[in-house]
Image (cartoon, rainbow, N blue to C red; front, side, top):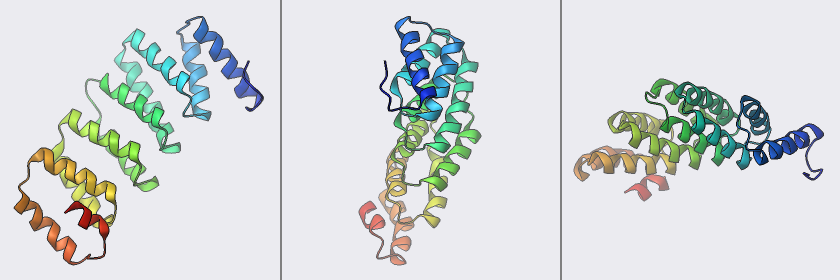
Length: 193
């Protein structure tokens, strides 16, 4: 039995989850239960494991898409939840055609909420590699630098892109040095160089 540190409804849900997991019941009922729990506790690891196992058993792309839509809602509420980002990655790995426009909308909203979110930048790096969208991302990051020139995360991501695009040092210097000359006190640029 779970201790009394949770509200009574959540405590009842957690006890029910333990029962379902013990019985190895993978069902819509279990998905509904875990959805209710992770909406309240986004870092509840057993729920995410249950959801992964359920989706893996069915191997239905529509369910992965639906799960990704649910995760997008959660991420906007709790952008620092590692488990949520990992579940998003798991879903995207199992979707043949990624809706890049939808992903970009989520990215743009996350940037407003928390532009230095480590999980976001890790996921974005992974997705860029998976979709091989390096040139588009370089344009995206160049635009972002206009408003976030002091953001180390943006500079780190740019370094990742430049490395994979194999942009020559001279060309990169032509872009960076004008930024540096007008922003001498911004440590992020110095760190990038």
